[in-house]
Length: 90
Image (cartoon, rainbow, N blue to C red; front, side, top):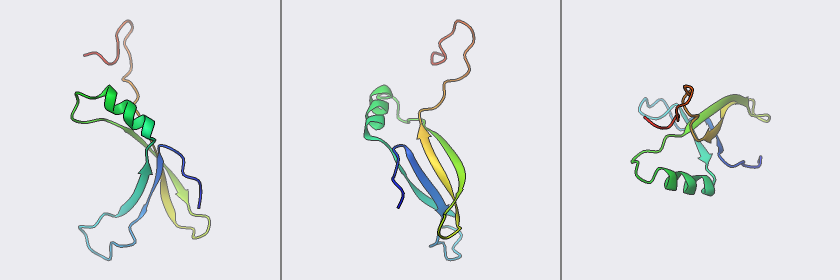
């Protein structure tokens, strides 16, 4: 089994779907670093939701040949900044 890196995960075919349309097509896990969570919770303590950026790469299992998505999670990129303006202020 490959070493799990912080703030990364996988998403692959749901082997338990069994033809039931209400079950998800893909399932997986993501492993978020505890320090990142603590930082986000303190940074967004007054917000009911915390926005995270998720990136995905198409990958293939070397032993089975089955395809899956490799995932990474991070804080969202700040919006493009106009000259002289703070991108996080409205």
